[in-house]
Length: 200
Image 1 (cartoon, one colour):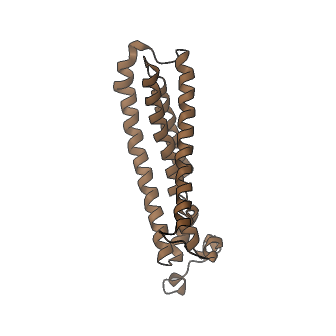
Image 2 (cartoon, rainbow, N blue to C red):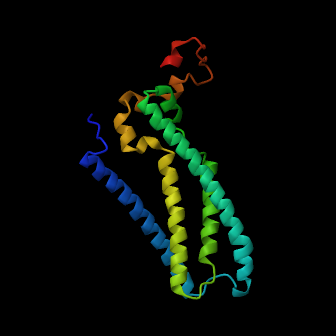
Image 3 (tube, rainbow, N blue to C red):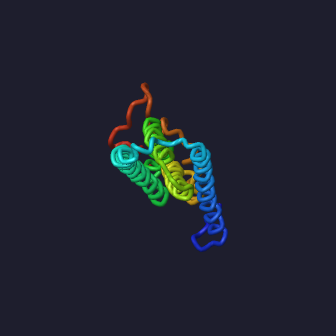
């Protein structure tokens, strides 16, 4: 299989399409969320006006602080896995590649991201905006950031979807049985320290 290099027009076009799709999906979903907010705004669905200071000073600020720290931690961990997978492919380290190939973020972490994202977005959408343009800019910007985080985390936690990684990964690595390779299972003894297994 031909490996496309960085300056190859085909690789550049492929990269452009992939990144354009990411941007378009993010903008589309952010626009859809903004449309929902506008529907709510026209009908006066928002927090009480006399509690705006409490909402911004206590609830929203605290929620955003927790959300920002948590998302940064998730992206940092996912990026480390992404880098480790790419290094494993370049160094022909099958053991490390299989260590990360099927690993995904625990479902609990995905739920936690959702449990923080949705309330944060709701708080932005239910803030009292006197003018539509202020609400549109605020809701769209925050929705775009949240959706972008979701897409980035999904990409980083599954590096095998990268065309660069896929082209350079031996076919046998893609179909290898992880449990069999690492000797997992109740009736499968672990290889000894001097076994050739660790040199694979």
